[in-house]
Length: 417
Image 1 (spheres, one colour):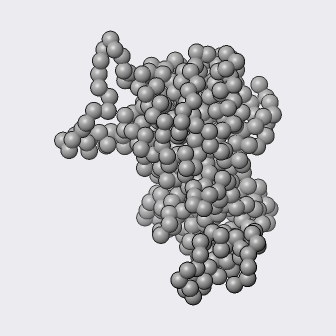
Image 2 (image 1 turned 30 degrees about the vertical axis):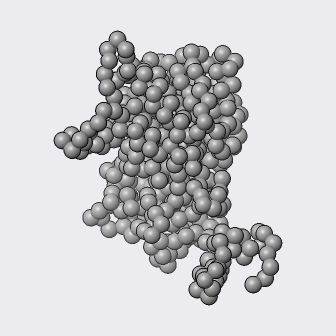
Image 3 (image 1 turned 90 degrees about the vertical axis):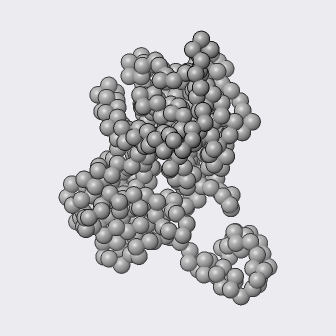
């Protein structure tokens, strides 16, 4: 059924079609509309049997999800930003226990300073926690990935994050195709857990493991991630056959076959990149974009194959590793080990900073000309950065950084120093 709806509502409807039995969540922008929609369905009785559990924190949300999944229930939750960090301990427990929980991460910047807008710093901070991480380009793909995520999680008995850009996707109204319940039922079988807490057949889950077996347990989590590299594209192919559209998979190229320059990116910015690349192609520039749908597990071979003929690679990132540089570009460079393309990292869009076609045109043309620095912060205001560095060099009590920068850009009133 085709309808115009908010991204969050589309995801809520997709999750409901997967027939979850337990939903637990704590509200935090920009994921709140998703769980509000699901809560309304449970209250009306249109999503049943399902228990919606209001919890007192994000840590409690993941703890309840762990308990529900361990008891054999198909389980879902959602979070963002500081909420994801608050549940970090339990996130590691969920993956370590091999529980097939599905969680939406409505990507949002991490403070301080407080910022509610989109970048990828929250999910990137948990890249080593053992969860599969799938990134959506559009609201249609976000909807489709949630349906695939339950199948993927339950086949491998692993938790899955579906990452969608906060506000850019969650609060945007777009036309989406929402499947019928019978179609989803045919694609997603009833949940049969690999492990379950059952009073009639008591077992221990999450028992203490010492040095004699801990490394082996951790390796098995890694082995499942490697298995996911085969399962993710197979499920995506089955989804395309059943529903008539391609969503998900490991990577997806756009105009990359003859591209001398390829931009690598995740999430909704791929749409803006496609428009930019079309315009540059019209000017005779051989450029394309490679979208990464699966960030964890990272598809080294697929990325290598897609990029091996390129003369240069520009990795556009909405997060970065402080003190080092790119997060995604580190993985891309590993995929390209032994090959010769020049790899440049461009950090953009932090804290919701607009990524415009004009800036992309300028930055990509500089990359092609060879004048771009290996690590570039697109549209960074060096004027206020340098002013703050000078301020700190001149006086010991230089004041709080964020507030100083706001004064420098005229966002708040201040006396002149």
